[in-house]
Structure formats: structure tokens, C-alpha cells
Length: 640
Ligand code: RUQ
Ligand code: CUA
Ligand code: CA
Image: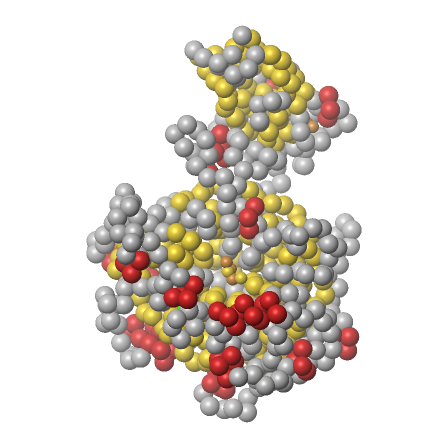
């Protein structure tokens, strides 16, 4: 692929391409373009000056001692956690473990975290790997309200909730009946009760179809495999309902009025092979009528699969032909779409073409007209289907009517005007809807702008996650980092202002004003049911072979600084950090017992293990807390 940095690809773009390649990319085309570096071309022509001639962008540098003006929440990818960044600096402030054990926090080690992650009957963790893709936060009045964020695990179909007052994961739910849980989006309001103008549901899309129930029957008949769209209660984190659909799910979007959720579908063929999944010229975007689905669930027009108690309604095409009763509407969009994003004005969902060089703009009021019986053809809710470039994936918004879409194959971001695209599609071919193009490095996937999918989209910053970094950083072996780039979008022209490498692969992210959050800086003892009442409470109690050791930590001492158990005892250590000073965290590790966790000021955690080896085992503080941090240790004596 090209490594030019001049930002002048539109100038090399006037090469002739065949209509076939311009319209759709087949499997060979996709592989060829990525691997061989074919020249790109610009759709609806827009020339761009080299970057050196563009105006300098805003300085993203945040001086030492100064704070960022935005929070960024990034999914961690393979590390199964949520990354917290300060923006625009891109400084990583925190990582919140969710799906994968983390030895700093003791995630997957402490009893509290194991209860959230889920265990086997023997107490071991049910899952130890994760693959997070998408993260979104709770809404109120069309903007983030700072309560929760959610993140998906594609491998084990889990959804995690992160409390944004403490930046900790407090619930994980495994979705039944599905595989390949990918897209996730909270609703923004209730479709019926206008007083509920905040998130109460989270919708989840699953990519892979399986036999239903998946219990060993019907495995050879792939044509009978099905996918489900899932609704999770935002507060209880219980699965409320699922919808049986035709095709699959990918990304998810929700409307600002709470009436509609949608998922783009790249496998309407319901194929199981690569070729099958790309055999149709068009796929779909499926729209869910939330009020009707909830009414059908309440009326008991449901079924269940296997051991799952979750009610499932029928959203298949065959059962949803009558708009007056339909739960789901299927809009035809070009081949293997990727991404569906809600414009901040509340009017449109935009699907990217992926294998088609187009963006499809769907007018939500028209979708509702179809459900209401006043629009005959659901496909006429498409108000634009315009060429924007090769391999379009995800779209962000600036609140000024412009969309920014990543072009994976072109290694570009295209800025285009939604209203202009609609006018062009309606027949005014003189309208230039592409405003600007910018080279990024390289192969961008997700993109998001500050406050993008909120009513407060502010058009300041645009971040893009580039899947390939190639030559941008010092080589460090065969695994290349990804490249996160930052773009100033205040002006007409996009200006690339910063980049940093990141461990693969973060996928998706949101960026919002720091005023929207007021996290706690210190816990209260009463936040934890097991908290020691005071230092006097520390000590050892025994009941049969079960021993409880209560430890108080105050820098730089553990009390007690030694305890004795017998080999074979089941030992529970409960530790409270009595320090009240902000940032004064202690760690607790026991040599040779595979135990490590931290306790923040006024926090309590516990761990349970079997003392199965006799001898002296030091426990010590793993978190630098005091000049005498190294002296902060004690002995566990295990008698035979
Ligand atoms: S998908 S790179 Cu997992 Cu978010 Cu589009
Ligand atoms: Cu306590 Cu280090
Ligand atoms: Ca397809």
C-alpha cells in the first residue's frame, strides 16, 4: 500500500477504474487492494492540497500539570478492558478490567471480581479471554449522563457495565442463544414514556448464526441456523428479550426518541462460508420497533430456546410482512454494509458500504411511516446512497451537518455533507457533497468525533483508529502497533495533528466533555459490606477449617503483620485500606500463592484460597505507597 504522506491522494485519483470495481469489491478485490497497494480513486471528485499547504491545526498538546478537556472511552480489544484517555492529548489515564483477569486490580483474583466475572462450580473463572469491540455510555436528554458505559466481549458473548463514578466494572451478563456478540448501543429514551428521557435498555447484535437451541441437534443443516437481536436491562443487567431475525447483526444504532434501534446486516445470505456471505449484491439494515416488541413480550407472544428463560419474539421476514403489526423492518442496503451510525440531529442512520463504495442515508421518519402504514415501500426510506470512496466502515458527525467516514481501502477519511448527499441523490447532480479527504495511516476502522453521537456534537476533534501502522513507529518486532490519529475538524479542512501507537486492537471509542463526569476520588468504608469497622477489627477467626483473616492497612503497616493457619485450611483474607489520602493505594500479594490485588483508600477487598503448603510465606504491599513501602510486609505461617 502507498506510504505517501502528502495527503494528496485525490490528485492521483483520477485513474480509470472499471465500473465493476467501482461498484462492488469481490473477495479477490478486497485482498488485492489491501495487499498490493493499488491506486485509490476519489468518488465525486474533491481535490486536496498537500498537507503542508493546509492551515496548521489546533495544538493537541496539553502542558504538564494541565488537564485534558475531554474524556475518551476506548475499548481495549484483546485485553478485555476499557481504556480511559484524556483528550485531546491522548494520554491513557486508566484501564478498567472487565472480561480478562488483571493482576494490578486483582481482577479475577478477589472474591468480589470473581463474582462479577462468573465462576465454575470449583471457583475457577469461567472465562479468561475477551475481545472487546464497542463501548458506549448511558444517555439523558440526548447527551451522556455519566452513569454507565457498556462494552462487549465478542468471544464469550458477554456485556460488561462500567460505573462511571468509580470507573469499575460492576456487572457482567452472558447473552444466551447467540454467538459473535458484536454491536452494542444503549437506547436514548423510552418510546412510550416521555418522562424517561434516559437510557434504560442496551441493545446487542450478534454476528454468528447457530442452531437454536444449540444443543447438538441440527448442526449439519446450516440453512436452519439463526441469529438473535438482544435487549439487556440497563439497571438490572438482565436480558429482557431477544428477537429472532433473518440474516445476522453487526453494529447497532438507536434513535434519539427511543422508538427505533437498528443493526446492519452483512450476511443476509445466512451463509457459512466467506463466498456465501458475499454472494448477494445487497444486504440489509434491520429496524426494530421497540414499543411493539415490548408489547409482544408483555402479551406473551414469545418462545424460549433450550435452558434459556429469555423470551424470544419472531422478527423474521415471513412473520413481519404487515407493517401494521411488524416488529422488524428490513431496509435493503448495498453489499456487506459495515457500521450504522445515528446523526446528531436525530434524523438519519447511516450505513457504510464496506464492499460498496457508498454510504446509505436512511430517514428515520420514513421508517416510522412504514410502520405506521403510510409508506408502502420500506426501501424508499433511503434518502441517499452516494459514492464516497473504497471500503467505507464507520461514520462520525460534527453537529454542523457533516459526516466523516473511514475508508478502509483508501486509507482515508472522507468528510461529506449529509444534506448535500441527499440533494445529489434526489437528482441534483451539480451538488458536490464531498467536502474534504484526508490520508490517514493506514486502513482506518473506527472513527469518532467529540460528542459525535449526541445532540451536543461539537465538531472539535476527530479520532481515528488505524488498523495498520506499518512504518509510522520504531520497529519492535513483527507485531505492529495500531495507530491512533487525531484530527482537528473545526475548519472546512481536516488537519491531522497527532498520532500515537497503541497495542492492538482498541476498535471503538467515544469522546465527551469532561464536565459530564464527576468521578469519586476516594471510596467510603460503607461502600463495602465486608469493610473492617476499624483497626481493632483486624485479626484471625476460625470455624472448622475455614479461617478468616481481617487485615487493616495503614501506610506503611499491615495489621496484623503475621498470622498462622494450618495446612489445608480455606483462608479468606479481607483487607481494608484505612488511609484516607487520595491516591494512597496499597497492594496485597502473598508469595507463591498466586495472589495480588490493590486496595484504594477506604476500599475493602477479599480473597479466598487453600493454604496447601506448609512454611513461611511473606505477604507484602505491591503498590508504592510510602518511603517505607518495602517494609510494608508480614508473614503467613502455614503449620503442618
Ligand atoms: S467493527 S472496524 Cu468490531 Cu467495530 Cu468496525
Ligand atoms: Cu503500602 Cu506499598
Ligand atoms: Ca452479504
